Each structure stands twice: as C-alpha cells, then as structure tokens.
Image 1 (cartoon, each protein chain N blue to C red):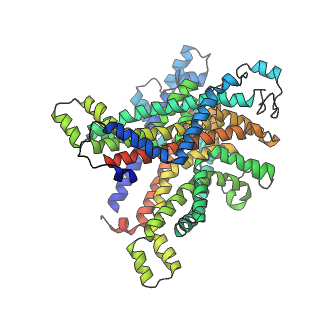
Image 2: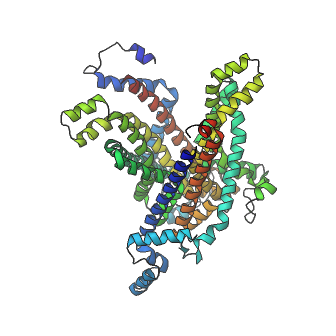
Image 3: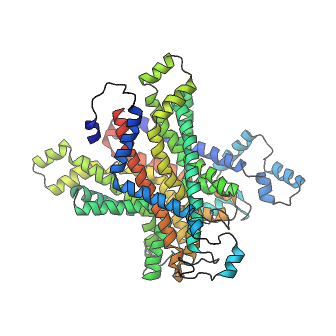
Length: 317
Length: 304
C-alpha cells in the first residue's frame, strides 16, 4: 500500500513538472516574443530590450524556466497585460466555481448512471436495456455545445421553465442554496459522464453476476435484493473511481464548453474570453491551473480506490 | 466467428493469395454491419453535398457586401433561399456546403497528420525500448494529462491560425493517443519470430519498422484514424462554437452554429438545426464506421 502510494504521488509530481515545462515552452513560442505582445507593435527596440531585461527574458532559457518555477512556487502565474492584473488574482475565485460545477455534475452522473447500469444488467436484452443503450449512445455522440444549446432552446425559450444561465454574481456554493438555474449546465456537463458510467456499470454488473460468490450467496438463500446490492454492487462499483479519474480531463474540457454556453464564470469562460482577447499569459495560466487540478483529481480518485479496495489496501505490503 | 469456421484449414504461413483474402474478409465483415454501411453512404452523401453541391446550387459565399445588398438578413426558408439566410444575408444551404468543405478537409487532414506523427513516434518508442521508450512515454503521459480543449485554445491564442494552420494545431493535440496505441502494438510485434528472422538475416532497423512493424499494425492505425477524423471535426466545431474558428468570410460548421445560437431566442431555427444535424450526422457516421472497421479488422487479427 505504502509503496503504491509513494509511486502514484511521485508519478503525479513528475507529470505536473512536465506540464509546467510545456506551458513554459508555449510561452516562448509567442510570435515576436513576449515583449512585443505586451508592449504592442509601436514599441521601440530600446523599450523591448529594457522590458526583456526587467523581466529576465534576456537570460539563458534554462535560467528563465527556473525563475518561472520559483515564481509558480510562490503562487505567481504571470501577468496579464491586457487586464493589467496578475493572472493568479484573475483565476483565484474562478477555480472554485469550476471545481464545484465538475464535482456536482460528477456526483449527479453517478447517482443517475449507477442505477441505470444496474437495471440494464438485471434486465439484459429486454426493451429497457435496448432503450437505455440507445439513449447512452445518443448522449455519447451529441457534442456538448449542441446538447447545451438544445436544452436552452427547449427548456428556456420554448417552455420557459428554466433560466438559460445561472446568476453570474452567485458564489461557488450557490448551486446548493439555489439549484434551479444550475440544472441545465449540470445536465449538459454530466451527459458524457452518464453515458460512460452507465456503460461501465452495465458490463461490470453482467460480469460480476456470473461470479461463483454470487451463485454461492444465492445458494445460501440470500434474497435477490441482498445479492444485488450487497454482493454484486459492492464488487462492481469500485473501479468506477478509476473511471472518474480517467474521464476527468474530458470532463474538464467539457466544463469549458458548458461554461461558455451558460455564461458560468469559471476557468473555462475565463479561458475563452482571454483567447478572444489575445491574452496569452492568462490562457497559459488557466491551462496550467486546470491541468494541475485535473492531475490532482485523478490522483485523488486513484488513492481513494487504493484505500477502498482491500486487495490493494492489504496486498503487496 | 462464422468466417473463421468457413476457412479451409491451410498450413501456417498462408498461400500466395492470402493478402487478398485478408482484405476480402475484412470488407465482408464490414458489409455485414448494416449500420456501418448506411453510415458510409451518409458520409459519401455529405462529401458529395459539400464538394459537388456548390456546382449545382450556386450561391455567393465570399462577398459580404454583395450578400448584404442582395438579400434580406435572417430570411426564413423560401424558394430563393431553400434554408433561409443568416445575419449577413448569406444563403444557409450554400453556407452549409462551403463551411462543410473546411470542416471535412481540416478534419481529414488533421487526422492524417496526427496519425502519421503518432504512428512514427509510437513505433520508434516501442522498437527502441529502454530509457528512450520510458522518456518518450512520459512525454505522452504529460501531454494527455492536459485537457485537450485547453491546450488547443492555448495554441490557437498564440498562433491565430488560418484553416491550414488549424490542421497542424489540431494534429498537435491529437497524435498522443495513436503514439501510445502503436507503441503497445510494436512492443508485442517486435518479439515475433518473423521480426527476429529479419533481424537475423541482417535487415536494417528502418526496414523492420517500415516494412514489418507498421504494416502489421495497420488495423489499429486505420481504426484510430477513422475515429480521429470524427474527433478532429468535433474539435474544429468546438473552436468555431467558441468564436475561435476560421477567420471570416470563411466559415465552418461550428462558427455557423455559434452565429445561429446568438439569435436562437428569436426562433431562427434554420440557422441552428441544419448545421447541428450536419455535425452530428458526420460524427456519428464516422464513429459507426470506425466500430465496424474494428470488428472487421479484429477478425483478421484473430486469424493471424
């Protein structure tokens, strides 16, 4: 267990270090250089040289990367010249909002997908199973931007039941106190997860139900409800933690689209606005933070899995 | 399954016509999948619609001033504009073809570039193994941990790409998966007897990789490339939807959809549903074709 923990944490650390290197190299690729991007096309060569010297951009590249890492360690993600503000302070209250959106959508997807997958396995090859398979394939195939817009057109414009965007000044926790405006964004973002999780649940339950210990439990006279919920589900459900970790990068990407559709002020909307504004330091900052959050989320999922599965918890000392 | 039992038992190594038999059985299994055949026809139809359609249904799609002068904006479908017009007075049906050309070209070419890069990278990594492989795969791990859309938007912000550059940018974020797939395949292939035989006979490394490892991974490569065309079209549509697609007056399906949803509250359905349908049709068709190809080529793999 301890060996696994150390290896997994170390691996996440190496990946994060690699991501900082990629983001640093991307910042070096700006055509004309960072000085030109910050000072504009009319800056003289003297001004550019002065800017480069002040920011240490005239140092060797490995020295610049080291400076960049030290700054990151102090929580400094760079400076957005378009906003005249540090990138860190621009991102600060956005990260929590995206994490809440992703977290709530994932929990919602689990709550919907696990019962659907179980019911499909129990009613295998009956109309319900075929129907839900068709629905999950549609959820898979429908791009998030189209699904979100169709939801808005139908529920906001046609039926006028739900608002087309949550209040932009709400706090990150407003989804708990005032959930109605968040229904459509959560539906949009969780569609992909519902499809993935319920497909997994269906096949995992089908596999588990053929195991010897299920037959033994039935032979001992356990009720079918107890066999299903007590024996089969407990064994089939655990790897879903790994699946959450694996789908996390896609879900964070989906959150970007969802935030853009519903004008939800998280990291994704900030990234899209920064991109339209040619604000490279801000886009690179959100990319780095979103990636680190994703890597840590996947790490958390794997550690939870290790803690929950006795084969890993007790095995290979 | 039925195919394998139909085969007359022939000695290992196969006869001279086996190469043809491989592909024939692949096509037969593919053709048994009705959904995939329908999907193939849908795809062919959309390609003809986008590339031949403009020859039959002539519309102005490039001169914005002329479009503004000659037609009404947001006109609903009529005989003069079969699917109405958009905010600039461009004919929507013609615009679907025009934007579809860019979506399809960018999607196909980006998938080809990504596949070529990924296959070469993965084959080299798997073939050489050792520290080279370890380093190469850590790089892939790092790349895959960045959410694709964030990386894509970062590249688009830095380079402000036109359509040709978009091909490179989309390929740059999607070569990682084939690299990993082909590397795994190469690891298993390079220990086979026939590869060892080539090596024993003095075949060069480039010959082993180019003539033996990559051709034997062709099933994996083709299946990945098919799915990746769908993914690339979706990535381009996502960029267009976010307002970061090809620059005007060019357009792509994502940009059209983005313009359409701006006026969704006004009920201009013809600016949303046709283009949404185009995106979903092409992406779903490509996914079904990829699924069927995987099944068909797996039969081939089982017999190998």
